[in-house]
Amino acid sequence: DVKVTQSSRYLVKRTGEKVFLECVQDMDHENMFWYRQDPGLGLRLIYFSYDVKMKEKGDIPEGYSVSREKKERFSLILESASTNQTSMYLCASSPTGLDFATQYFGPGTRLTVL
Amino acid sequence: QQQVKQSPQSLIVQKGGISIINCAYENTAFDYFPWYQQFPGKGPALLIAIRPDVSEKKEGRFTISFNKSAKQFSLHIMDSQPGDSATYFCAALDNTNAGKSTFGDGTTLTVKP
Image 1 (cartoon, one colour):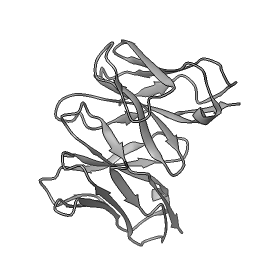
Image 2 (cartoon, helix red, strand yellow; image 1 turned 90 degrees about the vertical axis):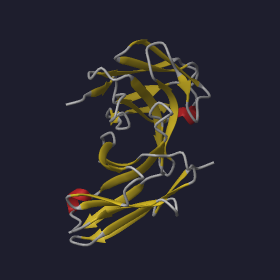
Image 3 (cartoon, helix red, strand yellow; image 1 turned 45 degrees about the horizontal axis):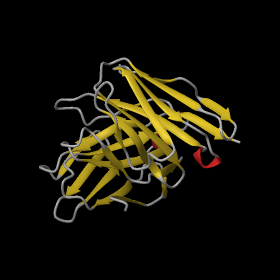
Image 4 (cartoon, one colour; image 1 turned 180 degrees about the vertical axis):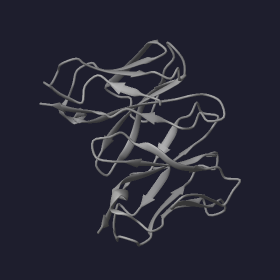
């Protein structure tokens, strides 16, 4: 079974803090994604990566950055957390090839910024 | 600009009934249409998916209907069960764009016993 793990299920941070969200997948997938999920807004793509050290902006990259130093790990960084970044953050991975479209999601990190 | 519009936002169905969730898209480059199911406290998981060269795909009680000319697709859950209560997301992606998916806003389904 594909497993995508996220470093924390719940996180509380203060405004202005630097926040790191970690994601690890164990299936050697090339593609990795970070989304935020807010009620009524669905899943919005923040950043994605299709290879080590490669990254592409998604639909809402402002206020975020990412790092992918190893194939299995994709980190989301909030340089200076703000209250409007309070949300559920979901990481996903997918393989390339015929079935690359299927994304496998982690359980999510609920971040609260006070 | 929302590229995938999903309706309804919420749906209540009696046990044994049919649940129908609809999605419409704008980008004609989309060529893969998955549906994801999300239970509380969990990440979304792939439920069923369709490519635009077929008009219908069925897996157990779940069926996707696809209308390419209308740029619409829908999920039908037959004989809905309380265990189907979850949030459902439709998605669309362009296979030439590194697996990047565009999601609908989600539908919260409640199946009453």
